[in-house]
Amino acid sequence: MILIINLNASVDKRYQLSELTKGAVMRAQSVDNTPGGKGLHVANVDTILGEDTLATGLLGGKSGEFIAERTRDYGIKGDFVQVSGETRSCLAILTEDGAQTEILEPGPEVSAEELARFRAKYTELLARADVIVASGSVPKGVPAGFYGELIQEARKAGRKFLLDTSGALLEQGIKAQPYFIKPNKDEIQALRGHKVETEADVIQEVQAFLDDGISLAVVSLGAQGSIAGADGQLYRVTVPKIDCKNPVGSGDSYVAGVAAGLARNLSIPEVLRLGAACGTANAMEDESGFVRREIVEDLLPKIKVEPLR
Image (cartoon, rainbow, N blue to C red; front, side, top):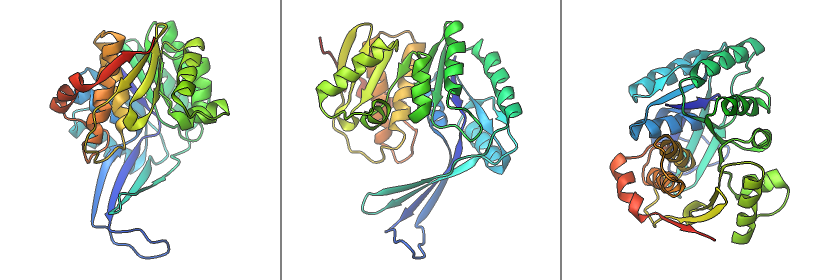
């Protein structure tokens, strides 16, 4: 089973406008409300891929009820811990010039008792999981080292833990040695305190992550693919050119592909290929965190995974 942790879920509100003008009254052409959060995107894609998937995390209030109901509609299995605060909403404003403006609420403040209940839930679910994914931010009241604590527990249980986050959460999480991380250049620069510009810089950072005890490290290069490292081997992953409709959620879809590949016990090159195919397939859709299984299958042979040395 793939266990997916989304501590700071959201109701994603997507507004389509002709243009966005500061200080003016704007009328939306269309509005979509969907369950959101990076982990729920991962769970949706893994469910579409046919994997045994379970999402967990924290939900509260009417927004939490909406997310729980809609994820069930999507066929996503969930086992969430209820909190007293209201689950956040996140707004994406899309305009005809192709720009996207996002407003992300911070989320509710979680009490120590609520966090303890989640830890107990995690321990219970960990016993049934083969691969664990933790994605995204955390709400107030959750310490920066929390993902690290979950990683340590998973490592003791012999489970693969995939971490997709940023900032202090990523910094503290790396110290606990998750199986997988996939920071982009900006996240590495914030983490390391120096520029990452050339391919040589990226290769150096991937090797540094491997030296830190990360088993599978991937640095995303967007449309240019990625550089990855595992088991002493470095890889360049390139993807075909596509008609990109909406890149939001492509990173989450990539993580879902990697999780599915590991759950299937694929080789590392095939894990990377499936991850890249899912990330690319997501960018071809209007909806974030969504792929079509047949498109993923069509993309797989078009993904190049080449050893760098």
